[in-house]
Image (cartoon, rainbow, N blue to C red; front, side, top):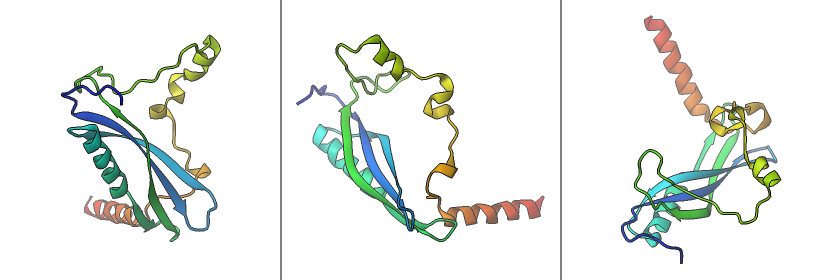
Length: 147
């Protein structure tokens, strides 16, 4: 078993969920990193599974097609060794003997980092919620009428 500090209270879980849209043969897989507050690795595991299963859903997209989000399981569960604060290390990976060429392939310019990339919805199935979109339109119309 990995080293877990006796006072550890935070864990990072990687949840794997699969999204399908009726009539589209492609599925979308999300690997979500979530923070888990727990008193032990076993407690963290159970809580991570609960967070994952709580995320399961089914709804219609704006085109009226059935969207299903299914929690497939965990791909990782790690303890956070540091106190949660600016600069705290949440996760780490280790690779021994990685050549410089491989390390350079891991590095991305700013515009390719996830937080700066635009979402290209044209390439993926539409798994947006039709109900939420309809409510947003309704609120927008009400806001315009009041102005």
